[in-house]
Length: 347
Image 1: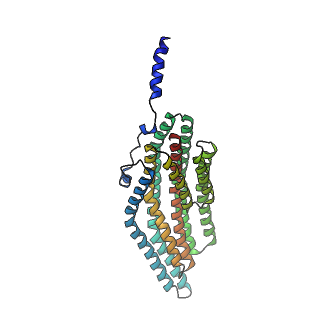
Image 2: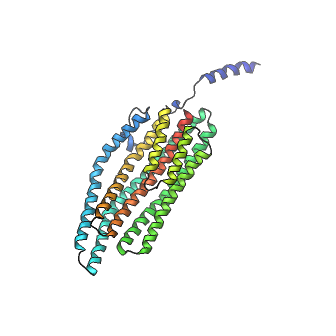
């Protein structure tokens, strides 16, 4: 009886103490993105606008560099077109030299963007390893132990699989894809074209399948319910139907889910974490996307006066940038969808 006299007041004190995710703090962001983030991170909408403004300010000097590469490629293609007017073996020599020259102009910036995308993916993964345990503890503290454990396990597992595939498989496949594109442009061999298309299909299939399995797991296991489930199902459909190298449809649909959830839930840890993940991704993503669009435009311009082999080569380099967008967007998407689920649960 005496034990109960002590236990009952203790239980009353514990039930009176509020447990909230607000008691947890956001892990510090990487130094490289500190300047992109606002001091006040309570509002997702305001924070996102600040991150976007800061990202575009950082991106402005890179626009001139991308435009310079495009101008160089168009100038080289025009020169090849003029010199290629002669008949016979001289024409083939000019075309071959032109393919090699344009490839040299494009390979260096492409290599830089591959390294940028790889580094960005690694940063997102490393930050996620700091943020997800905080969100898991916050959700478990509110009674969602099973949900938080399942969500944490799924996110960490899929992130590990995807980042490993990107570093060990997909990045080398991007280089193989570019090499095959250059060889096909130089010799016009149908075998090289089929191998290039096979590599392209394999990269697309890997990204689409992994994203589909992740979003399907989240929805089927019932980790979240209500509005979030509908958003996740919609994101899964967009993942299947959208072309992964051009990830605009996937990301726009995911953005809808993120904005709806962030507008409902007020949680500093979750919203702050989402803003950091977006800040890590936004500048490299926009830079790769800018190169992708400019190369698309360059291929269209060259197609007006140039040989089809050169136009296809430029389009292939643009396609490689699309794959980098898909890889970066896929890793970012996994973490953002998981954070939305945590936000719903904690909220």
